[in-house]
Length: 360
Ligand code: SF4
Figure (cartoon, rainbow, N blue to C red):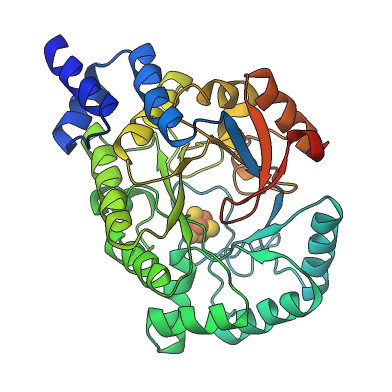
């Protein structure tokens, strides 16, 4: 076993791609510090200047009504529920104004898949945002885009073209959960299957719309299914090169129908490092301070992460599961500096806007 592990770590050090079987062996048998070591080798090669990036943005959840009713989700409400809402345009504008006032460059708008909000609604919303503000619209996950296409009776590619024309700049990788249908049938039975998620991402990338890719783990998946997920996003990236970053985050069981427990910090760090090692065609791996808190996210920088995600001036989805870590821009900068790195504010496409001295 040790010999096999040594062979795999040697391959990673030489910059060679590891196979699914090698990934599984590593995942099951390497100890935590070995994970840190090899993820750091990859990270240092890709980001030798010890810069850790973050974006200043706000999540705007325009509605909490959702037809998908995923069993792992604590955020959604049924249509007609007393606390169901749709934000008005003016409320959305006010949130964008506040974001820009804090140096924000991006908004991440995600629902709920609300049955009454159609493609015209989003075209109007995005074009009016673009006419009033200079801000990147990083919005609508593949599940929302697929729903809009179906509702309108047009293809995913046509839907994306219309949204892009109205102002959609990039797509968050949300709703990936685990890209294996056995898991999806348990955690999000009404949501798109993995091939549809992949179809939206490939179509977006072919149109020049970048996206992130995510993975929610720690619910009902097996080790092999985590590997399958990584292999599938790696294959899409080989084909399109359109993913800007990979963001693994842990299932948060509070207030959900699925229940159960969350992954431990050690499991999180191992999966993060495994992602860094297997996704040799991804430039950026993001630490999830929103689910792990600042301290584990700081350690994550030694386990392959080179990006701290966003300041998330507002976050509602993870908070609905009872987990609400918050950090200011200054705290993020301090955490990064304290870990021995240079903080840099970036934009949606990971272009550096300001290095640390100019941020504060
Ligand atoms: S995870 Fe997203 S798609 Fe699933 S119920 Fe929650 S809001 Fe709806």
